[in-house]
Length: 342
View 1 (cartoon, rainbow, N blue to C red):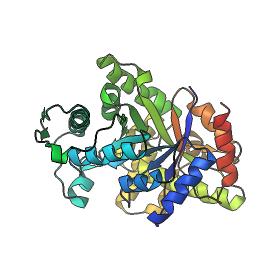
View 2 (view 1 turned 180 degrees about the vertical axis):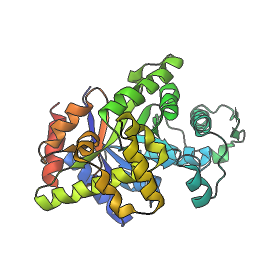
View 3 (view 1 turned 30 degrees about the vertical axis):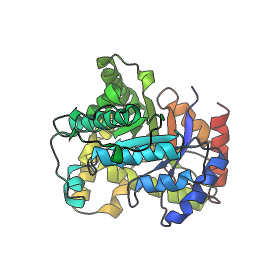
């Protein structure tokens, strides 16, 4: 199957610009548009994008799973599935304990993997009830739902809502294989890490449930270093080095550096992060690391390089660069053409 080429809504301060941005993305030929939960609500972003699009798939990459009741998330997704006529994709992430507790003031209730499994099971049960009129009756360790009256039941539709989950380590990768429709790979990734860590774990989870790896769509955000002039290339190189160094300093992402034998560098970055030496950390990222963890090339080369590296590993690719019409159009148009001609 051809790899799909997607874009992400990034660095958008004016939500009112999203309908126009989405319409332009669809006209360019992107397969999907992903909204993040960083400084805006992803469901609001996609509702806006749905007003000006007809073909492009619209998804969250990611929406937070534990900061809302599964019932609240189920309502938002049900509405977006109807608004998009079935083109909505739900991507869920767990976020770390500190953000759940200290930014959102919600309790961290036990391990993330079994709780996320219940979130997904509960929402699928709720959607089934809305489709069929059957009794709401979900009981788990973390969530329980038993009250649904006609007054609170949304209008029926039959659109499927595929669920992707995001992860870095094997626990969430296995869960994706067991229960999810897709898996979001973190932008700090490499072909070796995908081949040796992520895909075997997803396969193991799929085997546990009698599923196939083909049942799970693997979507990856990828660092890209390119530009139409030396200044652009230098900017994106420095940006990617800083991003890699920041993520690598966090224990949750240790597996990626460790897979390549870069444990000592990772430990140095962690020490620098504790000292808040953020501006100096990028200097530890070598050209070898950039060539491994990012795609580097001229604007019209990136598409072919993405396909060459990730063929057989990813089903969808999103460059880790904001799509801004009128900026880097040579890169975007050349890449879309390359993917369309697979």
